[in-house]
Image (cartoon, rainbow, N blue to C red):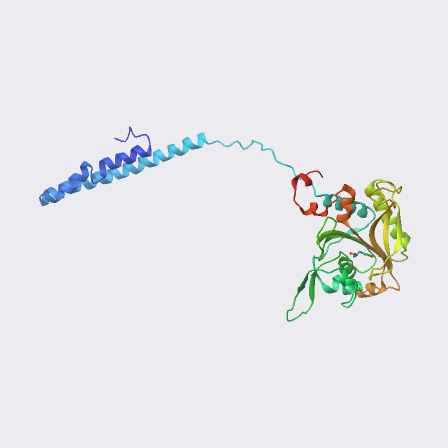
Length: 331
Ligand code: DAH
C-alpha cells in the first residue's frame, strides 16, 4: 500500500489520512466506547495490530525514502576537489627584505644572528650598558616602563629602546670571543611624524676577540654597505658619544645615490649619517664577566627602518606600519 508513495511529504499525508483522529481508524477508535465489551476487545485488538503493522511499515518506508533522498543529494552535490582558486600571493615587507639581505651579508662574514626579548629588564637595556639611572643618556631614550614588584624582585622592565641589550645577554651567555648581529624591534616615546615612529627596527652588531681595532669595524661596515647597495661604499668616522663605547663614533657612508658627488638625499654633502659605533667600554665587558685586559672589540647600531627607507626611497615612516596593500605590494 506504500508502493505509490514517492517522498516524505506524501508519506506524512498518508499517515494523517490513516492514523490521525480524523481518519477512519480514528473514528472507529472514538466510537469504540459505544460498543459492547466483547466488541471492544475484538475491535480494539484488531486496531492495535493494525497500528503496530502500520507503524512498522511506515518506519521502513521512511528510512527507505530518506536513503534515496540522501543518495540523490550526494549525486547532485558533487565537489570538484581538483578545482583551483586564484590565490593572491603576498610579498615580503620592505623591512624584511632589507633584514634578510643584511643577515645574509653578515653571516657570510661569520656573524651569528642573535635575538632578545622586546620586554627587557632595566638592567639589560640601560645599567649594563653603562647607563645608570642618573645618566642623562636615559632622557634621549624615554620609553614605556613596566614596573614589576613581586616578592622576589623589584626590577623594572621596559619596552627596549635599543637592540644593544642583546650584546649584554649574549656576552653573559657565551663570553668571548663572540661575533653577532641582533636585528629587532625597539620602542621609544616619540611624537610620530614622517621620520619618527614609536616603534622601529634596529640592527646591533658586536665583535669581541683579541687584537681587534677600529680598522676591523670600518672594513666590516664598508663591506656590508658595498654589498647592500651593490656599489663601492666608503664610511667615515666622526667622534660621537655613546656611554657603552670608548672611543665612540658617528658613522657616515658615502651617498649611494650620487656616489659622493652631492645630491638631494645627502643634502649635497656626499655623506649620509648612518649609525653609532665604537670600541666596547671596559665597564660593559666587566658587567658581562669578560676581562677587558684580555679581550676588546667593537659594537655598532643602525636603524634598519631607516636603511629600508633609504634603499627603497620611502619618505614617510608611517607607511611601513600602515598595512596599505597598494604600498606593500610594490616590494
Ligand atoms: N644603541 C644606540 C642607539 O640606539 C646605537 C649604538 C651606538 C649602538 C653606538 C652601538 C654603539 O653598539 O656602539 O642609539
